[in-house]
Image 1 (cartoon, one colour):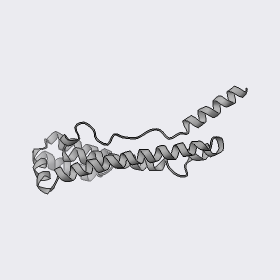
Image 2 (image 1 turned 90 degrees about the horizontal axis):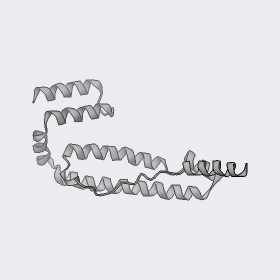
Image 3 (image 1 turned 45 degrees about the vertical axis):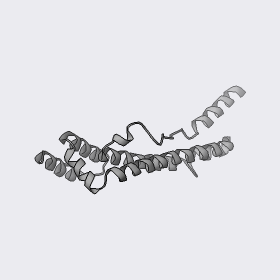
Image 4 (image 1 turned 60 degrees about the horizontal axis):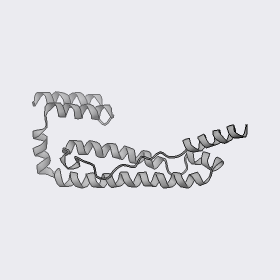
Length: 148
């Protein structure tokens, strides 16, 4: 019976820990990404950063650890901060690339070079993420198809 209780307690403590969501700051192919790809990844990283921030502070996980294994709170906070820092560094890295690559003139050139398929896929992604509504999606899609 003792071992069962110990096993259950250990499993609860382990499952309550913040997962490692750290991201690598510099990744292969970063410099070759288009302005659109950079924008999309920066948007996704913003969501990841908010998720990582939610793992810090007063959370259900930390409350459970307070009851069962209080040093686990320290581990959770350290890991949550490392996750936030790594995502923040990646955002800074990609923002620097975006700023250097996607200045007003270059962004105009790149828009002209994107294919219809890329434009439609970007619109679909924006719509799927609820960043644009149905009406905006349809209007933009029709405009893209007309301007091919």
